[in-house]
Structures are given as structure tokens and as C-alpha cells.
Amino acid sequence: MGSGEERVRVHERYCGEIGWPTDGDPNANLEYARRFNQGLIDRITRGMGTPKRPTPPEIYIFALIDEDAKSIQPGNFERHWGLLYYDGTVKYPLTLENGQNLTGAVGVKYLDRQWCVLAPEASIADPNIPGAIDYACQYSDCTSLSYGSSCSGLDARSNVSYAFNQFYQTANQQKGACMFSNLSVITQTDPSQGTCRFEIMIDTGRHELTSNTDRAVARASAVVGIWSVLAAVGLAAINL
Image 1 (cartoon, one colour):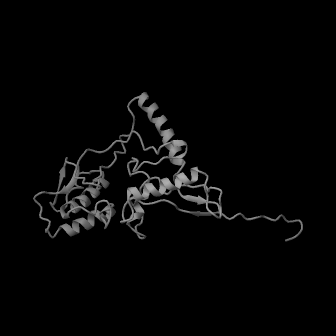
Image 2 (cartoon, one colour; image 1 turned 135 degrees about the vertical axis):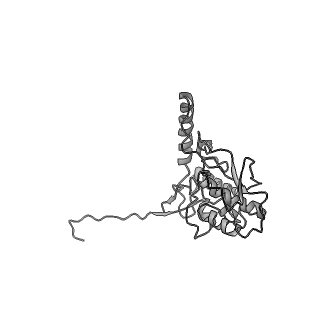
Image 3 (cartoon, helix red, strand yellow; image 1 turned 60 degrees about the vertical axis):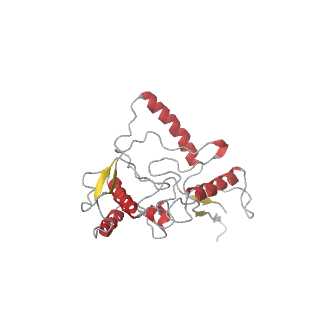
């Protein structure tokens, strides 16, 4: 370089992802994710880095919320990295910096408490069932049914019901979304079992709060929640 030119020093920055999934694999569950992420947060808040870089890095935990349409080519766990469920509820407790707790969404409204399930009179041996399941899971997320996942312990009938309901809720409970060759029926009895949650879709048109007091409370809660989440959510960015 000529004497009149400035030398520009390049600073390398390495970015990666850090977190733990909660479903879609035998090693992806709520307890493992809580232990990993809480241990990570505790280490950083204590000012601990690595043996090579003792200064604690800047971290952003992957990820804020589950992504039910994400590619599962690497594995079914890819849709379950969130600290929050699809509706913004907290999956497991996390203590952040200064003793703050992870805070979920407020003011969330849901569609009617009803689920699409396999009809009681339907035979599990009905030849139309495999095709109906394939169709339902093609357009909704059925990864929680995979081996070792939160819904892997369901019996055959409940497996079918789970697939039907995922499609029904993904379609926002639209009329006709629970019609699988006369194999399905709407029920008001929650079919959830153990660790397996049969979801109800959120109502995106009903999140308006009804009073100024509600808005003020929600706004204050949201501020605390946002700062809590920002303290530990996103992609990992580590300066080496």
C-alpha cells in the first residue's frame, strides 16, 4: 500500500446459534431446554466467558417463539426452538439478569374451545385414514407425533385425532376444515393427554383490549416482558 493510503484493520466477528429445542426429538424436551438455557444465562450474568476469551460474550438465545412452518430437513426439532409457544405463553421458567423472569404475551384471545377428532364410530382400520393423516400433516405441523416427542405416547386413535386437530386449528377452525371422509367430528372435550397439548388457534381478530385500564396494564407488562426477552433471545452473536 502507498504511504498516503490508510490501512484498514479488519475485525472478524463470528456468529452462530445457541439454544435447545423442546420437542421433535427424544433429547428435545422442556427440562433439557430449561437446564441448558438457564445454565447459559447464569454463566453470562456471573461474568464468565470461555478459557480462551474470559470476557463474557454478547448472547442472544435462539429463539423467541416456535416456527411451525420451518423446514424440518435437519430434524423435526427445528420447529421447536422457541422459549414461547405459538401463542406467546412461556414454555418453562427462566430467571434473567437482575432476577427478572421471562414474561409471556398478554391479552391473547383464542378461537372457540373446540377440537377436531376422530369420530367415535370411525374404525381405526378405515382405509381412508392414512390418506387423511397425510393430507392433514402436509398442511399443518405434526412433528410432535414423532418418536420420543411430546405426543409420541398417544394411541392410534389419538394420533389420528391430533393430526386432524392440527389441520383444523391451522385453518382457523373454518367450516369444512374438520371433514375427513366422514371420519372426524367436532368436540368440546379437550383431548390433550399428559405432555401432549391439543392446540386451539389464537383469534387474530380479537386482541383489542376493552378498557383504558386493561391497555395500561398490558402496556406495562409488555414493557417488562420485552426487556426480559431482549436480554436473552434471538441468534447467538459471539465476539471471538
